[in-house]
Length: 102
Image 1 (tube, rainbow, N blue to C red):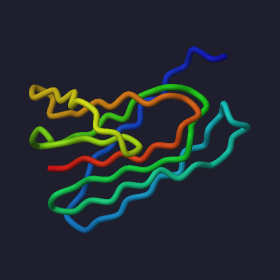
Image 2: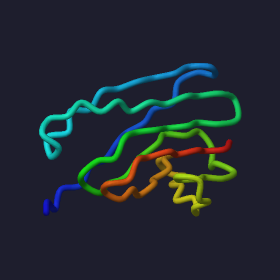
Image 3: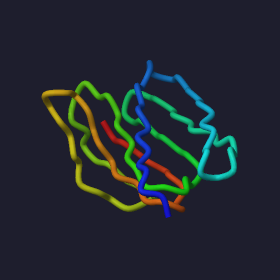
Image 4: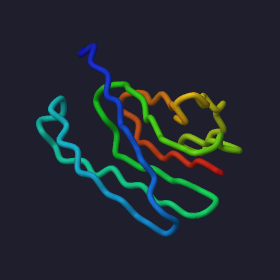
């Protein structure tokens, strides 16, 4: 088992934008995995297939979100006002469906 951690940095764009990034997972036989982000005025949604190592999603946001859900479950907001970032821990072997309500 690897002790590596993956940090996915997300920089939401403008209202209505959809952004995709292909990550080549070296711990999963170099499998290409698409990480997607959909932005609208009230919500940012980030999705990714499962990774074989734990990590976090670090999202740049101008204001603290009203609510955050990871894979359908409400989670606390770990928002750093000094850096304008939200940090969401993710576990290995679980797909990521992150919904951030603004």
